Image (cartoon, rainbow, N blue to C red; front, side, top):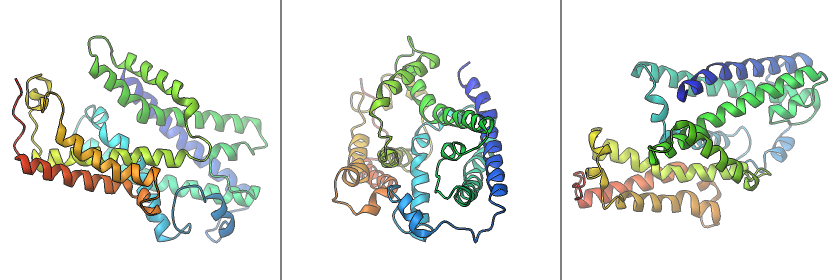
Amino acid sequence: NGMETVRKFQDWAGPAVWVMMLLLAIYLVVKAGGFSFSHTIPMDVLLEKTKNAGVPGVPGSFAALGAVAAIWVTYFSALYLNFCDFSRYCPSERSLKVGNLWGLPVNLILFSLVAGVTTIAAFNVYGEVLLHPDQISAKFDSWFLALLAALTFAVATLGINVVANFVSPAFDFANVFPKHIDFKKGGYIAALIALALYPFAPWEGGAAHFVNMIGNTMGPIFGVMMVDYYLIRKGRVDVEALYREDGEFRFENGWHVNALIAAGIGIVFSSILPGLTSVMPAWWGVYGWFFGVAIAGAIYYALRSFKSARPYPAQP
């Protein structure tokens, strides 16, 4: 049933993860004999455990907190580009805003607090810094609790992947070949490609850097889209022209050269130079998404302004 199935799955998957995380936190706090914010993990232990996390600065410092916030923004970067795949199913603009408010900042802050309490309590119980819930559940004495936790985390993983990695490519394939591929078939194709690429994924230590690099690549695209919609088109789009082969969105024989140039230059500075070379300072890569948005957006605006801010004429 397409997106309706996704919605129903997320309706119970999200609360299930929250319930399990709260139970896990309570279980560890009780086992640790209580919790206090004076209970901390020794700095030397924390530094050793997080040295490959890709976050500059001492844990707990403003530099580290700023870097973590930037990484979170980058982490959701792919969803910024295909947010319409979800927003078009909202019954009203108000429900969209309320859902975003509770689902992003409120949910993220509260979940981070619970995760922090859980990590500190687990250290007091097991004497190890366990950053992943599955590592904690593996320490349980009860096989039933371990199994319950494993099932919950499997649901969480599936839920994240459906939203972030399944919906967008499923729609993309369906839009490219609408006569032959629907949402369901597009999803199968995306899943098969993911399975084929799985052995090459950088799971051992490089996952955070890889995801950050992908996110930084999305920044310039986002910058071009925002500048085009808000500054060039002033929030007005000819929807019918989107579906006309000879409409204004054909650009230069099907290629939007200005957008490609702007995004390409932005990607060089946001992703390629900081990710594959040592030309840029280490902190640049952490904030690469923001630099990419600014650089690509500025270049695109300059190119469009130079040629004229009017929409491109339709091509014959």
